[in-house]
Length: 314
Ligand SMILES: NC(=O)c1ccc[n+]([C@@H]2O[C@H](COP(=O)([O-])OP(=O)(O)OC[C@H]3O[C@@H](n4cnc5c(N)ncnc54)[C@H](O)[C@@H]3O)[C@@H](O)[C@H]2O)c1
Image 1: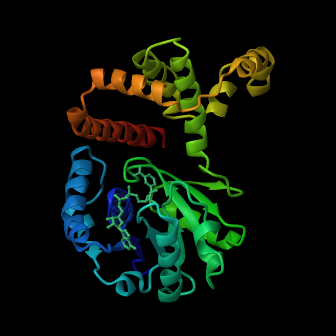
Image 2: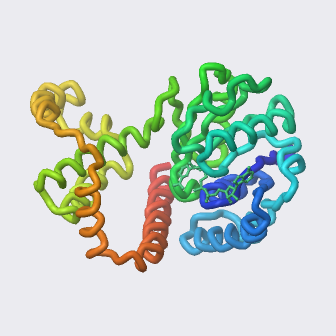
């Protein structure tokens, strides 16, 4: 089978991450950016990130082999010619995405999938009326997609089931973990769940139940230990001898009481400022960049651990 090519449009944080995902899985990758400086810096930034992955034993080929699959294309038409998938990663502006998707619809083969990385715009807001609207969808990644495998697939009412199925297959082949959102909903799945957790953590903080640091510890040294490898349903299924229904019998009432006491957080500026100041006392603004790099190294170590478990289990 000839090597397939994908196009990455927009070479910021997310676009560069996607380029690594596809190149390390063996796809050829055409990267395009409207900003020539961004495009000029993309290949060397991708090389640095692939070298980091190599340092953690997370790639199976030499760095140069992977990076050689990535090509910078100043011309949009050339970037998207004969590709199986276009992954769009430009800024979060609906009008700009609408204009770009109209261009993509015109410039690509009718069987090319057109996917957006948008964090919050529904597919229907930038694809309505396009001739190829049935092949348009959101493929929402987590930052950075090269380290966190989830991708949420969400189509408009006019996206064909075949396009969703084909996208699932391509993302899975690229080593990602696709999930499908059955109907359009703001925030897709991940940000709705993250929003619920944030809402409660913020509210508990606002009411003075605990410090920001202790609430973070509840997640990092409590819930997230299991949640890094199993979801909330599997977690409760294993937390009662009779499984999920037994858990619901035992603790459903407690959760209902908690829900009835819940005070939704309104994102008020006073609480945000207090929380921000508490965070800055722990980590100064100057240290955020270095701590973000530390986070990425921790993610790489976690991925390496998961890979070693997978090979042990198989
Ligand atoms: N950053 C995150 O955590 C995150 C996570 C998931 C999804 N997303 C989504 O991914 C997309 C990109 O986010 P990002 O953080 O990489 O943004 P970014 O600002 O880092 O990069 C955007 C890039 O797109 C280029 N661009 C803008 N308009 C263009 C056009 N018409 N044609 C070609 N290139 C163009 C810009 O020059 C820039 O290099 C957004 O839709 C965002 O919502 C972001």
